[in-house]
Amino acid sequence: MQGLLLVAALGHAMAACSTVEQAPAAPLEPVAVTDFTSVAGKWEGLLVRSPPVRSRNDDWVKLHITEDGTFRFEAYRTIGAFTGAGQFTLDQGTLLAKSEKGGRIAARLYRHAGQSDRLLKVEGTSGDGITYYADLTPARRR
Image (cartoon, rainbow, N blue to C red; front, top):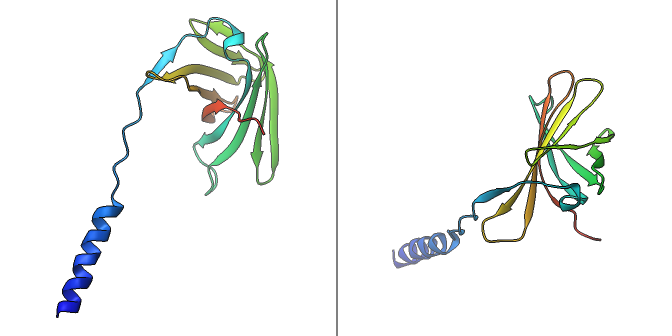
């Protein structure tokens, strides 16, 4: 009986120790993009498609923005890479792009309150109405 009580007490102690509360993330604050140099560079993150078409609904995407606003992207999928390029324009602090086939991209820059890390939230719609979302961070140098 004492052995069962000891096992139960240890189980409760382990459960109590394993529940570690994480500090809430600092809220995101929008940052107006006033020129392309403030977002120039390489960005990367997870690209999510809506509506999903397969059980795995995400791809890794890399976005390279130049100082004149031209961009190119690569999304890596199991079946290969999906690539594209274009030219951003600025409208009220937001990066915008349109394709000849009816696609659109809007990207907005954010920072966590009181921190210097940046997040580029991208939403794109293809010409056939499929929506893509990505939260991109500056690419790490390798």
